[in-house]
Image (cartoon, rainbow, N blue to C red; front, top):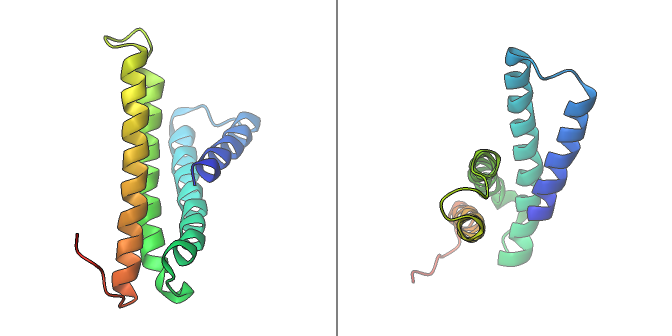
Length: 130
């Protein structure tokens, strides 16, 4: 899923380099378009992963995949903002970046599990409590 997210961001970034989208209002609209396309691609990736990992039927995974994609997309946006504005010269340097990467991995796993849980509940599957 991370490969899908990164490759979609790279492809949309390459398209943005070709188009003049650096001005105020146009840049904001482009960021919204980029976020929407990223959510759609991630939603398809989550929808493809849920039946494989959980045994759910295809018709039950839509809601969970959509919610997981939105949560994942928001986290990706926040992670990108941190990488953009917080540099290695910050108080903790590279160790702080390592902590943020570990938090990103935890966050993305929780987004995946929440979407899978939501898909299981929507599909009427019994969800085991921990």
